Amino acid sequence: MRRFTKIMFLPFVVLTLLAACGGKDDEGVSSPLIGTWKYSSVDVIELSINGQDVVAYLIAEFELSEAEAQEIADGFSINAEEESDITNVTIEFKADNTYVSSQPGEDSETGTWSLSSDGKMLTVDDQTFEVQTLTSSKLVGRISQQESTEVGTMKIVIEFSFTKS
Image 1 (cartoon, rainbow, N blue to C red):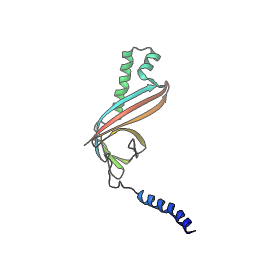
Image 2 (cartoon, one colour):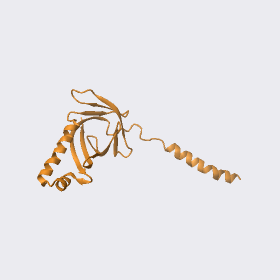
Image 3 (cartoon, rainbow, N blue to C red):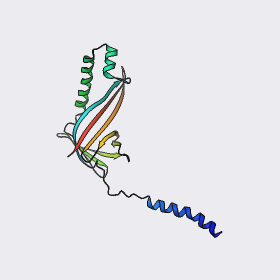
Image 4 (cartoon, helix red, strand yellow):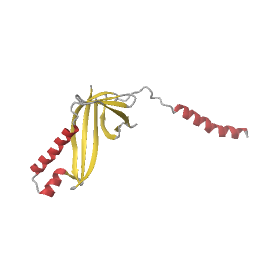
């Protein structure tokens, strides 16, 4: 009976040891995201309508030449950069998972951020970005948006780049 008690007690000891060793060993380790970042660039990576590249769509639907269709597509890209209006933006990501975003002549914005455990998804307030690159000096993130329009579903993927100040 005593041997049975020892055998039954062994899993409890093992589980207790595993739980004790399972604590966070990475306390004090900071994310490379912590610090102040300055806007570098924004690029339209993908622009499609109903799953078809916008240039091909414009050629097929409106019988445009490739040059005409490309000129219209380039206009979308320019508008995306103008609408993003982030050319002088700096963002300070703080260790307490808050941020301060500043732009000359504008009020600062504050909020919260989180980075997924694998470092591939950055959530700023309620907006999630796919992290392409995150080093001690460079941050590149992508955001994908879809919208239904009268011509169909339009998808745009925009890539933002920041450098650490």
